[in-house]
Length: 508
Image (cartoon, rainbow, N blue to C red):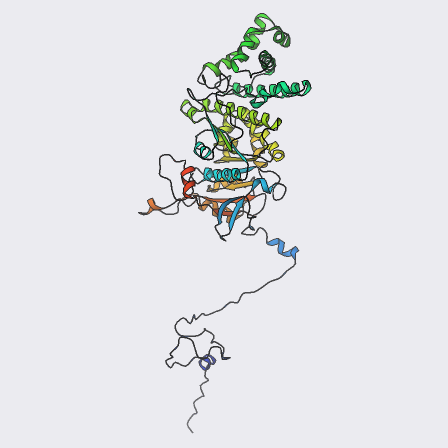
């Protein structure tokens, strides 16, 4: 008997397979009729066959366990109010920053720290922040514009620009602003209290100027500070309706009035020995490289009713860093004395937005500017002034000459709850991690903005990968990455690379 061949079993997929006869439609006639698709999906054009279709798995758990997944890759969106920065690079939603409006809600103070490599758009972001806050009614104030890059924007806003330099404008570091026109109307007790405050400010200004290389190159000692305090008071009393100038203080020290000699308990050659150094330092400020700039009354006072004001010291750059440092101290002292005086008289009620660009110059200018920054950052929560510190690297802080100055500069960073970080190296981000925690994904993203990943014949048409991209960190929350695009008007107003044509992206 011949052996019976085993019956071949028809595979399940063959039974369910769509007939191979030609069809007039690409859609299977069996679809939607209760027939399940085969394991590999429907055949034919646009069938989308897949070997495995993973529907995914949903897990649930209590908040005590799910919380261990933190830190998340992405942060939640920021409130859509304040200054629009751009679109989130991952979600496309609008990203805004509002250091002033966040105070008491998301942050504890309106300080803002901006750092990135040169040329990736720090100044463009800061100028947009200033422009929008001016539209909200704030007053933009640039106390020392080292490069003169804010002058165009301020003039377009109808603001006041004071240019410092030989043959241009001159400011008096001892100027009291509008206070000098109101002192006579005040009661005796209140007038004397304000005069004491003014004397203290003027003494701090002279001490900071003397600490630069254009003066003594060091801080005055206790005897010299005592002599300066009395000399400033006597110079102010000699002309009660005007502000003293540096030559007036020099004249008092040289005349050696009895009140000054009694204060120092010295006379004759002993008095000369005690005051010789401080007189020589003040002489250097008015007869040296700064001659004609800070040795007389202010030629053009700041317009405190303007929407924006600036002291442009770009003309001093050709004279070296020492002159720029002294110029920054003098212009800062004049600007803040003017504004504080106006606020004490209720002349200025608006909040300020203060861009501190070229901060590395300010930090290295001398102890006077570090102290000034420190005092401003401690008071801006009360006044709700938005102070924006702009620098390239945290190493700028460590370059200060003394540990006391370095500690004060670190305090500036700690009091800024809002950080904006642009393209930076991995080494730099390691230093940042000591101040703000960064996830691995955040570090990878920022370092990818630091330099181009490829070169070629089309390199001339490419835009730097970090141009106009920023990671916004608020406290310890996850960062939000945003990409900013400038309008045509902004590209004209914010352009700071004078030797190149404006780019379509965010300029420096």
